[in-house]
Length: 110
Length: 298
Image (cartoon, rainbow over all chains, first blue to last red; front, side, top):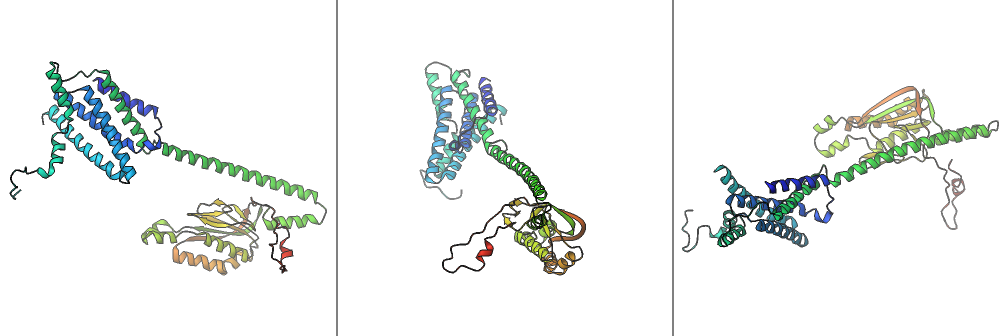
C-alpha cells in the first residue's frame, strides 16, 4: 500500500511541477519509463511470490535505468541509437509481459 | 518438429536466450536474497514499509510523471514555443496595422499642409497631380473590380494528383498580368485587397502566399482599378487581360469576376519614400539617359 502511495505521489509531483528536462536527456525518458515499469512489475511479482526484497528492488531499478540509458547513449554515438533503443524496449517488454502473466496467475489463478 | 534432433542437445538449444528470458523474467536476485534471509532464520520477504522502498517508488513515479508531461505533444515545451511564436506574429501584425494607419494619417496631414502652403501658386495643382500619380492620395471614383480566386477545391481534387491541384491556384504572375493589363487599359489607380499599387510596388510569390508590398494576401484577390468608365472596362475585357482570365478559367478552373462599379475607393500607398537614382560609374561614355534618371522619383 505504502509503495503504491509513493508511486502516485511521485506521478502527481512530476505532472504538477512540470520540471523542464534538458534536451540532451529527452531521448532517455521513454527508456527510463520502460525500465521503471519493468522494476515495478518485477517487484509486484516478488511480493506475490513472497520473496520481495527492498534492496533488490532499488538496485534492479537503478541498474535497469543506468544500463538502458548507457546502451542508448552508446547506440547514439555509434549511429545505431534507434535500433538499440528498440532492443532495450523488446527485452524489457518481454520481461514486463512475463511478470504481468505471473501476477495474473497469482491474482486470478488463471 | 519431425526432424530428429542431434543427441545431447535440447530441442530448443538454439533459442536459449529467448527461453531464459521467458522462463525466468524475474531477477534471480529476489530468489537469492530470499534464500539468504531464510538461511539466516528470518522471513523470506522484507517489509514493504522500508524508507528505501518508499523513496524508490517516489522516484519511479517522478520519472513516469515527468515523462508523461514532456513526451505529450500537446503539453510539451515545443508546443509552448509554437504558441509563443504565433502570439508574436499576431502582436507584430497588429503593430504593423497601427503603424500603417499612422503613416497614412501623417501622409494625409502632410498633403493637407502642402496644399495649404502652395495655395494660390501654380505649384499646388502640380503637387496634386504628382501625388495622384505616385499614389500618395486615396482616390475614389468609377472603376472596375476584378476578383480572382483559386479553383474550387472539389473540382481540383477530382482531377487527381497534387501537381494538378496547384494549377488551380492564383499565382503572382496572374495578378501581375491582370494589373499590367489594367494599367494598359487606362487605369489611373489600382489596389489589390486594399493595398495601393504605386510605381515601386511589387507582386511576388513567397511559399504559397502572394506578397504585395511585402504584405501577404489571402484569397480572394480583389483588384480595384479606377479609370474612365466609358473606356476602361471595354479596353480591359477586349484586351489581353480579358482573354488571359478566360484562359485561366477554362484551363485551370481559376475563378474570376469582372464588375463595373460607379464609386470604388482606393487607399493611399503606405510605403512611399523619396528615392534618388545615381548613375553608375560608366567610365568615359556617359549614357544620354543618365541625366534624366538622376531626377527625384516623386
